[in-house]
Every structure is written in C-alpha cells, then in structure tokens.
Length: 154
Length: 204
Image (cartoon, rainbow over all chains, first blue to last red; front, side, top):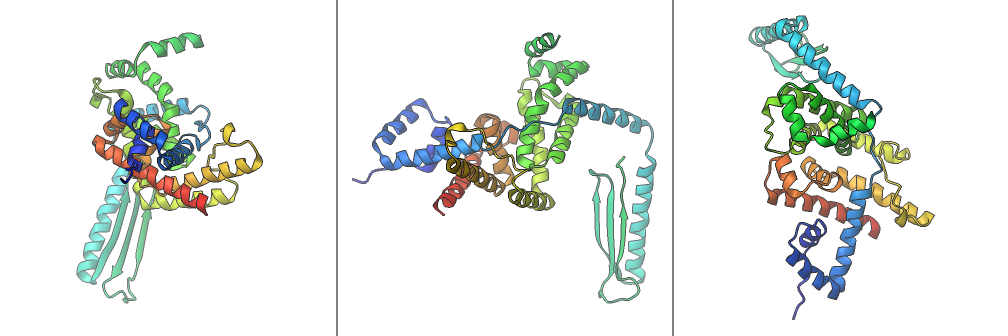
C-alpha cells in the first residue's frame, strides 16, 4: 500500500498553529514514523526561522513620535486655514490647466496636433506634464512641447 | 514620572483611547501615536525597505487616523483598523512600477556594497557557531530577502503581518478585507516561493 505523505500546505499550516489540536496530533503521529515528512517539516521550519529572524531589529529614527505629532498638527492647522482661504497656487494651477486644455483643443483643431499625455500627481505636490505632438510626427512647426509645473499642493 | 505615564498607557485600551479622541480628547491620539509609531514603522519598513518613504507612510497613516476619526467603529480592534490603513497605503506604493524599480535598484546596490540598507539579522547565535556557519546564515538571510522582494505586494503584506507582526489569519483577513481562505492561500504561496528559493540556493 502506498504511504500518503503530508502536503506542504498542511505542514505550513501546522507550523503556523492554524490547525485544530486533533489534526495537529494526527500529523505529528505520522511525522514521527515517516522520515520523508519529518525531513520536509525540518526544511519548512528552517524557512520559518529565517522568515521570523532574518532581519535585525528595525528602529524608527530619533524623535519620530514628536515628528509625527507635529506633522499631523501642522496639516490639521493648514487644513483648517485652507477651508477659509483659497490657495493662490491652487488657483494658478487651475488657470494653467485650463489654458493648456484650450491650447490643446486649438492646436488639435487648427494645426492637426494632438494632446498625447497629461499626467497630474496631486499627492506629491503638483506635477503637470503635457506633451503635444503632431499627428504625422514629422511637422517641423510644433513637434513636441513640454510643460512642467511643480510646487506644494494646496 | 515616566512610570506614571507607563501606568496610564497600560490603563486604557486602544479602543478607549480612540473613543476618547473621537469625543475631543487629543491626549488619546498622542498615546496611540506613542504606542503604534514603532510597530507601524517596522511593518512599513519591512515592506518598502526605504527609511524616508517608510517615515512618510507612517505619518500619512496617523494623519488618516486623525482626519477620519469619526469613521472608526469602537466595536472593532483599533490595531486592525490602523494596520488596514497602513496596508492600503503601502500596497499603493508597492503596486506602482516606479516603486518596484527603486526597490530593485536599492536591493541590488545594497547587496554589493555590504548590505548597508538590507537589515540582515546577525543575532541568532545558535546558527552561528563558527565563521562558516555565520557565512551560510548571512547568505540564507540575504537569499530570504531577495526572495521576499519577488513576492507580490499582497503576498508580502500578508506574510509580513503574519510572521513579523504576529497577526493571526483572522486579523489579516480583517486588515486586508479578504476572506480567511484567501489569507491562507496568500501566506502559503508566499512561503512556498521563499521555501523554494532557499532550497534552490542551498542545492546550488
């Protein structure tokens, strides 16, 4: 009769302590008798060891707690301020976006150019990249226009 | 004085502190920052391997807690909620292609320059009885780190929560908003990949 060996998934769950007591006992009963499964268990335990202890102690930088609190307070305070006053940069950004879109439409209509890419990243400040290129890619008039705006987000 | 503060921290549960904060007591928030800044930094650093970005993400996590305090339901553990916020932020970072390129750059350079950035553990005494064993232990740790970097962001988060942060499958299911079977599968596949990588390296 062929011996039924324990599958890797079961051994992994056994090490994680995610099996019932009855199931764990049954598996240990088999492992004590089966060299192949015992070897497998030892290999998995080794992997487990490196997973748990493979890194040295990670410690946050000095005064990290204070840094977090001041960051949160600062953000909360500026958030409250922004709620009352519209940001100048925010308005300038909106204006620049509107001009750019209008320019793209104009070029698209008049010169056959096409707006190929706009990327706005609001999280890390305001980055706006627009590339305008001609449809045939060979027009010497406007082959590529790049615009880049950067600053603190409002 | 310090002892008094420690006693106070022990007195109130996370959930009580958060409820107090919801009611306007900002001391509750400060105490939660004191409790969670180190574990969260450790957790995020293990995923991103970048000090600056890890600090930013921890700050962002606490900012979200601060801003979304009304969304917290005190019937659920605070730990699960805050790790859920941190995991979602980390997954966004890990998912971006730019991030992957930077990680691979840092890992490749750190493994060549003596591993300044890769925190390889050197304290497991029983596996380092002689220089040869020490070398093989270091190699295994390095291989493990490389294998970790090959995992998908979700596998990495599930495995880090389970192995390094000691979260149960049930807790991970809540944090990642997936079912228990999915957690089991994520963790097993992650471990299997690492297990295979380590075995292949040993056989070479």
